[in-house]
Length: 496
Image 1 (cartoon, rainbow, N blue to C red):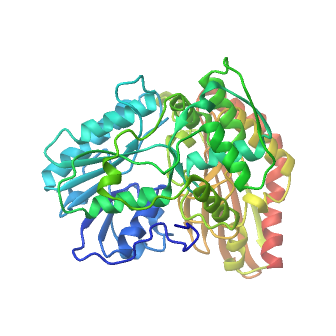
Image 2 (cartoon, helix red, strand yellow; image 1 turned 45 degrees about the vertical axis):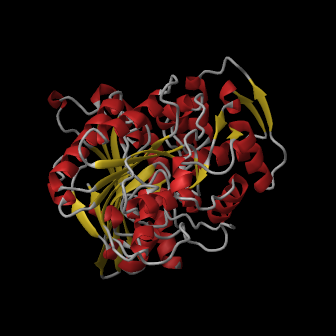
């Protein structure tokens, strides 16, 4: 089977005889954002639950689904009402020191809501790993979530997968950047650990099959592709498929998971806070030992080389419908806030300009900032700030942006994320770089007789005394980059 035969994530196009009412959590995330259109294509009725429904607006399928606004940790009665199969695709990995306890609490809330609504089946995508071995915190938490979900009367099917290969997945992005950036790599012992990667297409095919299966399925289904390889071998296959020279790996036994995760956070788009639990898990062998899934659903699975080749191709042409960093998470943000006694101080840097272009073209110019377009002036300073953020464990400038001239709510733009936008009027970016406070960069456009009034505002809400010191420390640099930024936007609007 050739994964390039079509552009669909699943190959079975036939509409099912009996549509299923499916609730999908994590619809704006990497797997959920691909599962929803696969279900719709087969005639199922889909409902998504989202804290911010606007994040689903850019999806081509958004008008074909029902959306319920709710937090997965809170009241889910409306979201679960009338649902037959509920799909659990959320996780809290790296979200603070108590993320493991939060994952269990969310799973229990989800299970109880499903019980109360009379849901027939819960489908959960977790992680591979031997329950009897000493699992990493990440994998142990993945398994514990499965146990919590299965603790009630609702039939629960837990799909366990290892490395998911697909354009935009966290595992693939780590593999891609490490292999492409480093021709010679000092590596820890985990590069020899065995794993069984699986194509995102096969993950989706298994999920759809389990959702549609009429008979009893309760239990764990271990899923993987046809190849069992070491991480070193996987890097070698990537280099071959990408047309790179052979990569040299130099194992160093003393390289700890913490140092490894900091290195991953520096070289790849995956921040150290998220990379740490992922890297910790690489010491565990993640290979299918129970072949129940293959017997129940005996379809041909994509080989690793073909999956990597296809993912490289889709990445090259920008055909990446979802990415691992699409979902908003405290991993990308500073979690702490000022104590109440510090007050609500907010510093601002406001620049205005009358642009000799209409509001539509001006707003379009605003929406082209970041990524390869850059920030119009002081690129060295922006890159220096991005490098400092990477060293601190933040995303830096590596994430870029999905489209060169279009933005949507929730989409990352370098070390920012789109918090709000109104066509031809407003764009608000919230910072996800490591900061002693919270920062926004926003633009408003409004028509005036001479064209458009463009207002650019940088806002910073400091956390504690250090946050205030930080603002005064970087203020001189604002004077170097912010005037050039608004002038560059104005110039781009006029030239369009």
